[in-house]
Amino acid sequence: MSESTNQLGLRTWLGVLANRWSDAISQAARGVPVPTYLVLGGLALLQLVNPGAVQRVASQEDGRALLLVPTGSLLLSAALAAGNAIWGPRARMAPGLRDALMHCAFVVAGLKLSFGAHVVSEPAGAAIIGTLGLATAGAGVHLWVAAALRSTPPDGNWQAHRHRLLMRSDDLARGILIAILGALLFTAGVQDVPGAGLDPGGHALIFPLLALGATALLGYGFLGIWSMGHERRMIDPW
Image 1 (tube, rainbow, N blue to C red):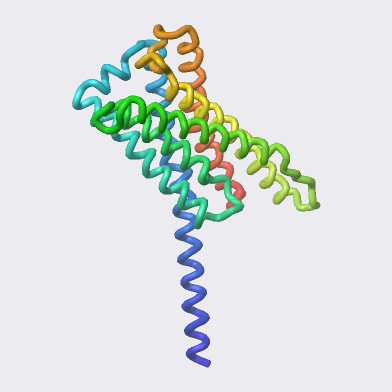
Image 2: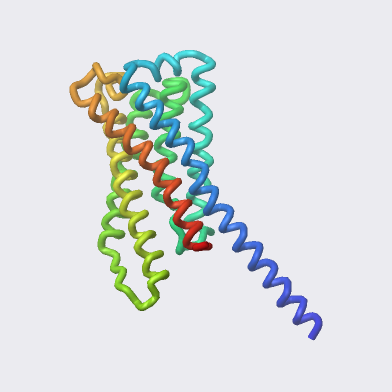
């Protein structure tokens, strides 16, 4: 009897540990990208008002080192989002594989911007970024469509119904933002003119594309803040 009790206690302890581990991954996957995407949105705004500013920063050694900070954060965010998709709680508003794919696309774009042909050749870099961008856009559209078609009929439990509505709203917003950012990455990857994807003066559409990109990057960051706040209230409404 004592051995059986010990085994039960061990399983319970392992279950609690696993739950805490998955919760930690879920929270980190949601929290780490927030400042990163707000910084990226700020860089996009800087490029919008001062064309060529980001390239000038990336052309300097200290600037390249500075740009590696958000790139490294995005790589960590991709790993956390993938881990959350595998081990995280399914009923939470948290990033998953679609977000991980988008983070990876921005990592490649950041490395290409910082190091250019030293890391990846121009044609290969454009092909990789374009492919990842297209896949990211498709994943965002899929998330939005799945959320739009998801039925959330009231079942008598208003609190649970409200939670489902909040999770659906989070998926709808994330789907739109991921699709927009993926489409912009695809556009940047397939630009024929070097640097045209970053210079508002290089193409008539670049200015509105940069404005849209800045809005989507900032929107993704603020969505993370919104979802973290609402999830805390879902767990502890008081």
